[in-house]
Length: 204
Image 1: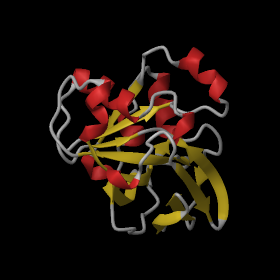
Image 2: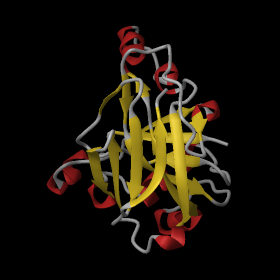
Image 3: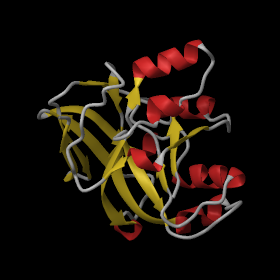
C-alpha cells in the first residue's frame, strides 16, 4: 500500500489557479507506518519541536491502474476520508539545509492520522466538497475542493504516469491555503467533511 501526498495544492482566491497550474505537481511519498486509524490518540513525536498540521481529504484507490486518463480517473476512487498530513518543520529545515528530501520530516510514526472513509458515491461533485479542522474547539482550517489547483482526477492521472496505483493506495490531496500551524502536546484535533465529525484524536 502506498501513501501519496501532494503539496501546495490550494489557493485562497480561485483567480490564482490558472497561473499556478503549470503541470508540475509536487508529489511525495509517506511511509505506511505513518498511518494511524480508528481515531486513536497519537504520542507527540520526540523527534520534533515544530509539529505542523495540515488537514486534507484523502482519496482511496479502488482498482489497479497505470497511465490513467483524466476522463477515467474518477472511477479509480473508491472512498474519500479525511486526515492530517503532519510535518516536522525543524527536521524538514535541517534536511533542506543539506538539499535533502522530505522523507524523515513527513515519514515518522504517527504522521498520518486518517479516518472517516465514505463511498465516493456519497460525493456527487468531487469539485465541491467542504471540509474543516478544529483544534481545542477553535476552527483553524476550512476548505472546499473547488479551490484545488489540481483536482482529484488530475492528481490521479499525473501520479499514474509514474507509478501503478493499486487498490488500497491513499492520496492526500492537499490542505487549504490558510490556517496551517503548529500543534503542542495535549491538543485535541477534530476534522469534518460536510459538517460531519470523522477524525477525532488528541496528541498525548
